[in-house]
Length: 133
Image (cartoon, rainbow, N blue to C red; front, side, top):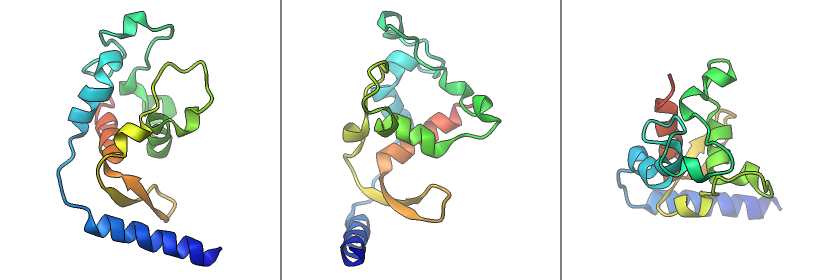
C-alpha cells in the first residue's frame, strides 16, 4: 500500500515538473464560471441569479462570515464540488472537472502536506479571496 502511494506521489510530482508554465487568470476563470450568478463583483447579483431557486452567496463576505479568516480549503472544496456531492439543494455546478484542465501543482493547504491540485482551482479560489471586504 505504501509503495502504491509513493509511486502515485512520484508520478504526480513528475506531472507537475513536466507541466508547461502558463499564467492562469483567476479573474478570467471567475468571469467564465461564476460571474453569471455571483455577479462581476461577487455579491450574488449576476444576471442568472434571478432565475435560480436559491440566491447565490455573496462571495465578498466569506471571511467575515468565518471570523475574519478566509477558509481556503473549504472554498476550494465548494468550488470543486467535493463537499457538495449528493446535495440536491445546491444549484451551484460542480466545477472540478472543468478546472482540471491545465497543470497540477503541489499545494499545501496549511496542514504541511503538499497535494497535487489543479492550478485553475487555486487561481479561482485566490481570486475569490481577493474579493473579500
